[in-house]
Length: 122
Image (tube, rainbow, N blue to C red; front, side):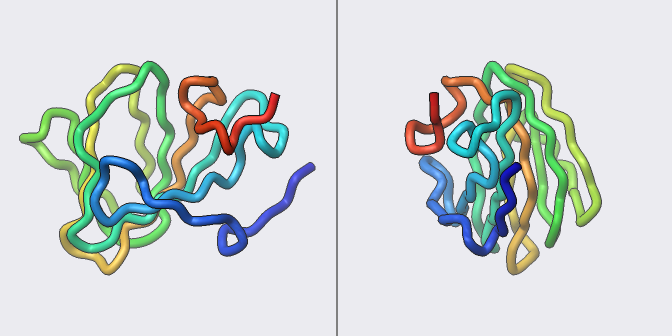
C-alpha cells in the first residue's frame, strides 16, 4: 500500500502548455502496474494545446471551471464533479478562461511511453 498527499507531491510545469502544472500522484515509481494518477492545475489564462495519445484518459474535475475540446472549435464547459472519458487517439485540449485555478485528476494506463523516466520504476 502507498499513501500520500497531493501537497507533498512535487509540482512540475507541463511541457508545451501555458500556466499548467502536474503532480504525479500514483505511477510505476510507487509500484502501480496498471494505472497512473496525475493532478493537473491550469491557472487562469492557461491551457494545454490540442494533442493526442495512444492511450485513454479518465478525468475528474476537482476545482474551478474549465473547457475541453476535441476539435478546437467546439468547447465544452466542465465544473467540479464533472467526469470525462477521452478515448485513445482522440485529439483533445484544455483551457481555463474564468477560474483562479482549474484542477482535475487524470488517470492513464501505466504504459512506458506515457510515463516520464523519473516516475517509472521497473
